[in-house]
Image 1 (cartoon, rainbow, N blue to C red):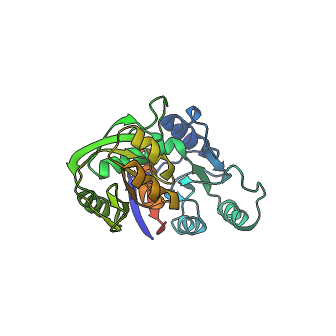
Image 2 (image 1 turned 90 degrees about the vertical axis):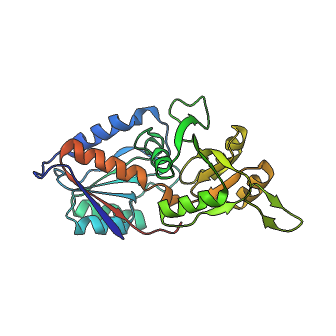
Image 3 (image 1 turned 120 degrees about the vertical axis):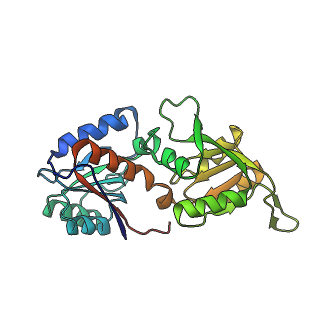
Length: 274
């Protein structure tokens, strides 16, 4: 577990959970998205907010870290109340919510709006880290695209692997576009310049990336089928980790909040190999 502290002003102020939510909702344009979980305030801790913890997922370890940090609010990318999950507050979810309420901690979650934001979003921050420039959408008709197209200096797959490894602190799983079934070897001679990016669990967007003329596609997860898709579509695929690719957005949002309200904000990274 690692923690990064951001404080915009020395005199800590206090805001309500509703005021924090309204600012984040407006900044991320949450009303423009149809999502798989509610965006915004998911648990109201019932007290003024003076200290905030941010993290990728609202797991119990993050809640414990927030309690230890005396935080009044947690802001995450992966919150609660996803479509299709049981609605009852029992078991693991019950323990998590109970601990938040017992300590008066509010919890805000932002999913697709935090993927798509053109400045502070997960895709935008990952592109920045990799030295790429976003200049298009994977699905051009989307007004708030959750997948993007970026360009970079022409480079080999090995070059891009080195850049990803340095930026994210872990090596990606690479499926080469140049696969020779007769020898079961992969070669990396082609140059990559046009790249599709969609963080997290967007591996099935690889076909759209190929359709849009991308040389490579970067996401977080990989499925068994993704290997075959990359080889048959002739596009390099880089699975960089769901968690690893989605740290940037929530950190950036925390920094914006710290600057806006003068609140101490701590990003806590709960290690996750997935």
